[in-house]
Length: 581
Image (cartoon, rainbow, N blue to C red; front, side, top):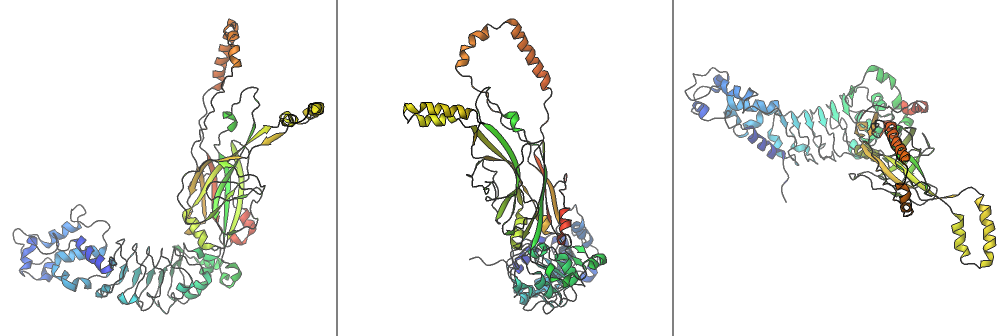
């Protein structure tokens, strides 16, 4: 099994990348006089050495090669100030970079996205280290005994840290910033490590985008950090609670910045006393989904062709918009319950309505990425075709599964436009009764004839086939901004221009052939008249209308306190039409 990649190994590889012993750094033919001890390092560093021998370069010329952005030896734009310092030391005093001396020069160490898995004891060689940034690696465990005691900044975001116990065994006493964003912290067992007993001088703490759920429990621990002024908790399930921001601001009076937003005195005054109202800190989230106007729907009747005189079915069309929402919500009948349907499939609607009808057939939906969350599909009430269908749909979802809601928001929701087509066939009572009379004796024919006459006077009855549903358009709406500081995602879903397939013209029956002779003998006037009708038709058609893309207005709002505390305020939420995602 391969050994875990350590911080020390990544640092040595980084030194090789800097080329501290290659031109124009280090010692070589370009400054070989130094190799023989000519001139003092201090004088050379100040540019006061003796004249440069022929064939060699002065320290100033070598530094210019490092600093000129057009030079092939210039450091790339991603290089840190610490990297620039080491390269300049390699020019002015290369002997300081030999052996373990180099560790005494490093005060800031940045190792980003290098596949590091282990924070090894080799870090203790950096006796002057104040800043250690190990973001975007694969670190799951940090042993505090391997960290220099001089550390003031420790950044571990975008790793796999799931337990703080080892980190808090002997934490650096002077640490002022601890970055643990985008890790795997979850549960109350981690919150007990976030107190002044472990971090007495902590000023800034980043816990964003983990899986913390207990807001009151976390706040009780953070309140012991007397020097804490900057806190990031966005992206955690607990940040979805309506009273999240207000409760934190009122509970931590020394806090200056929360989730990268400055706390103004007016905001602190607005939330004054909220920390003493535990009934508002319920572990649930409220999300309102609104659907507005639908445009660009092709008229199905314009492409429907039936033979003249044919006894074809009566076709009715209706349309709805579907969307996904996280599994595990509580249904309290708010919003627009009339016509709202909960569908069983998370991707393609089956519309298992409570009528007990047979499930419909449907066309396959567009290929979608697999989801890490489970979701239900909701639908607006069905509406007949129109140029513009205004749904005016609004539904409030309440869920206590905050972890599931976070996963749902990370994945986004699927919005679809669904068409339902129902074919209704006229019921022929003669055909039904003839099937019975064929099995009966001839003496009952008179009774059947009398029944037929009575039923011919009754209204025509229809038999409806199971509805056929097809997806007119599907797209994913990203919702990740709701995990940060945004409360509203408003977009116009554009499904593109729909071009329905025109049906083929009806096939002529054999009886039409008999009329062929009559058609060939039509008078000239009739032929001319036909030509005029054709010309008239061309004039009436005129220029074709430009097709309009199929679009629907969609928005999702995460309710925050005090908006969530007012039912009347919730009713004022309207679809923000025209905004693009």
